[in-house]
Length: 479
Image (tube, rainbow, N blue to C red; front, side):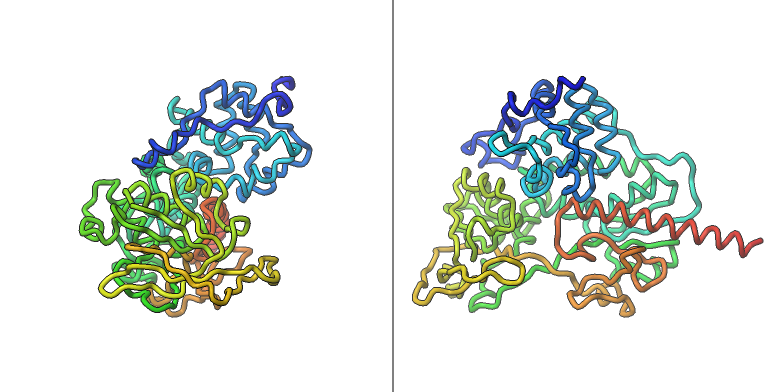
């Protein structure tokens, strides 16, 4: 079968067919089609099976990428799915939304001029095919254990932990303040990147496996953390970070200046058919408006591309650095440009203008000076470079910080770091409260979905060790 690999010299890199911008800018469907079987096989055959697979090393989940590429190239797709899902709870989600250009594909060792292997799209193809052919089954345990686990947060980290713990036989209960499982996968990421049925079918599989969901339940308001600890033998906090970073400039409180997550959540809820008063009254709807999005990350790209689909008159992205220094995926920037978004590079807002509502963004130009301690050039304002952008809707996409978890959970004893993230012992992933663990963004700060999955799986392993030790101790005391 070796002749089916190392074809990067004769087979060019190819992505799945991408819908034309003129068509896709009017709906929220995913922009890439599925690979045909022969094309996926051909792209997988480009893998060089290198001795040191940097794609795997730079994947937070340490996915066995060369192995499942080899199996796909050889037509052994069910085996490829087994290998892919062994290290990743949600490979079809990572295949869609991971920034492969910065992770696995960005570290592919194929020589320049031949381009990297199309890893993400093959990963998506493998698992979508596995679902179609019935290879994906609920992770029911071989035997039931009497111990129970409470997981706070139904995002990728919490769901990954729930899956791993349920497979071991624990009684798993997931609590979330939203009315649907998925966290930001459902309400923060637009459908053109991740269609919602992809997330809901995973939640349905967990239900079939025996995971119990308590949705619309807010810890601290409906149930205190102390009560949760009494109900369960161990608790995992995987809430993510939701407090939007703000900007302190005149006019920031004007109507029409909104937070990115509020804007994206409203759009996603409308996609579900929910009643969203703030969307229906026009507050969070970009239709017919001049929109300015402030920020340069993936959330900013989600906002500008959502505004295009809502029928905005114009959409501009204001970012204080240049394209090369953007924290978001370069693929997303390219998609946005194709769809008509205008980028205003090296500019920062001074004020939001308007009387009863926002009418413009007054900004100044930026010069990138000497690099700071992180290696990034320091933005410096250029004197006399002020200009104004017309805006009826301004979306602040400046990142996220942790909420005040001790106050929110009515647990002042819960220790946090100086950044507000939960403080844990990184060997055990346990907080300062016995039996209470934490994982994902609420520990590491705002990060990628793939890191949340990794943290959730790691936390599940540490919780299993803790619970096993607890069970042995109980047996010893009983005897």
